[in-house]
Image (cartoon, rainbow, N blue to C red; front, side, top):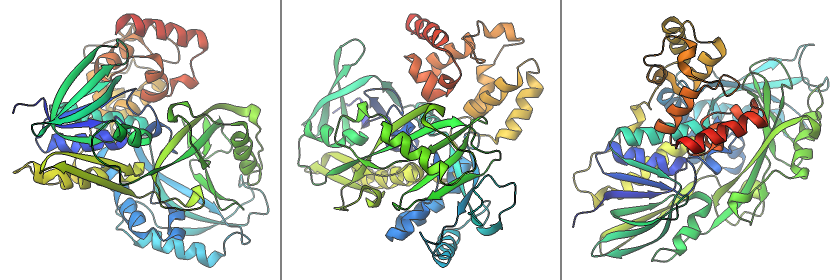
Amino acid sequence: MVTDYDLLVIGGGINGVGIAYDAAGRGLTVGVYEMGDLAGATSSASSKLIHGGLRYLEQFEFRLVREALGEREVLLNMAPHIAWPLQFHLPHQSQLRPAWMIRLGLFLYDHLSKRNTLKSSRRISVTADSPLQDHLKTVFEYSDAWVDDARLVLLNAQGVREHGGTVRTRIKVLAASRDQGVWRVQLEDQLTGKATQVSAKALVNAAGPWVTQTLASLPGNMNKSMRLVKGSHIVVSQVYPGKQAYILQNPDQRVVFVIPYLDRFSLIGTTEVEYSGDPSQTTCTDDEREYLCQVVNDHFKRTISVSDIVWDFSGVRPLLEDDASDARTVTRDYSFDLEDDNGQAPLLSIFGGKLTTYRRLAEHAMNRLAHYFPGVPGSWTETSQLPGAQPADHCLADVQQRYPWLPQAVAVRYVHSYGGLTHRLLAGKTCIADLGADFGAGLYQHEVDYLIQNEWVLQADDLLWRRSKLGLFLGSEESACLADYIANNI
């Protein structure tokens, strides 16, 4: 029977597009359907780190940490324009964890997986000009990495498209049923209300926080349950100078990151709070704001208050229920639920996972589905590069040479957004006037058109908070003008 797709993926978060990218690269016809925007929920609300998860060692999650550590340099190679190494400083407080425990943890962190470029951990001296309070005399340093989480999702979606796949946003999967060995999937356009139907040989439920709700609309039994844990972050003006991040221990056994952000800010988070509401309605509460400010004030000479917050965001992590009593200790590992109908029309549902291990999750998912597609090639993404992949410093030098008229700040932002695709964006442009009207903060009309045509931008928030973070720099009138322009040009 002829079908529209070999594989249809429900959900345009990191796991959904990661699986679709892997599948499309193996030669399968793939469709991704997302009811909102790409990375519109959890996948754009992370701490934006590629990390092994140092604290997960205390929970004996050695397999997860080893896998995550191994993925750091893989992802740095896959998208070096949006990801780069980051040094972390861990102030020691003996009343929370003894120094030997931290040394042991860092030794494991250095040796559980091979490192090629990331530096090993060490103890460093605290000098008088340290931003830390004077009572913090000992600091340990180790390496992880930073990534633009929303653009990582976007690049995987572009990779799907480059391999011949289809990616649709604002399209909700209402229901699906098996018919003569294939899936019949009912869709609804969230902007127009138009209903359509497509067919697929296999179905992947990667709906994140909505995975169990999606399963309820599909045939079969649910064998696993989810636990929703909310994580909130705040952004304030730079707490300290320097490029290092901090990981702060706290008496409640949580850790909070303070991360340099967009050269002008500090990103602070995350909280971990049980959540039972609509995942699309999560917000950072007053208590969470106060908590994060207090953690900073307990460690740094410069103090902050809620009034210093310029932006906050929250996301709901869809974690696999493991009966842990504390949200902090719920496993970040992932699991699959696979069932079919007499060897046909498989349904693979994804439970749990974390940003750092999305590629391995996708690889494992496709290996589970491979026998439904005889002759499909094996794993391939470990050495792949995502669209635009190019070291940022090399790319910036090339862009500045070829487009000397481009303002420095705009050139830097282009490189860290589009990498080598900057040349596609600027093709045929010879002066700043060619970029059209400036909506503010160096966002020109031509870039907006490019994002509408190439990056699935349908609403202003897609551009302001996911394709970029220009929402931090545009005023309300400028944002409203942008919203009107997009609405009139999609």
